[in-house]
Length: 66
Image (cartoon, rainbow, N blue to C red; front, top):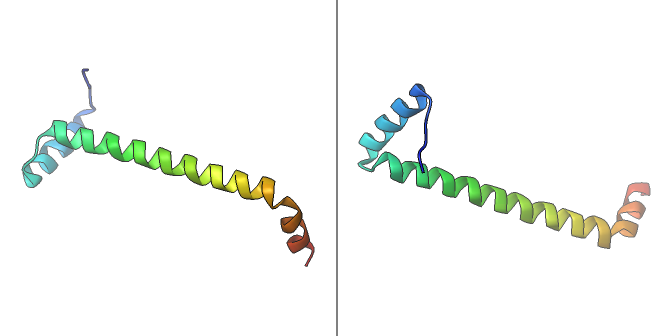
């Protein structure tokens, strides 16, 4: 895979990689893993909200009127 980055991001990655003594590749893999984890978490939260809304709809309506 080839990744073409804007110059400012490429420079920033160079600086971070040097400061942390890792490769830019390692930083990009780390960033991709964070994106995947965030999306997975978001999907789990969305699923939980959908579950509560569908299974506790009557309770939520009663609480709304209270």
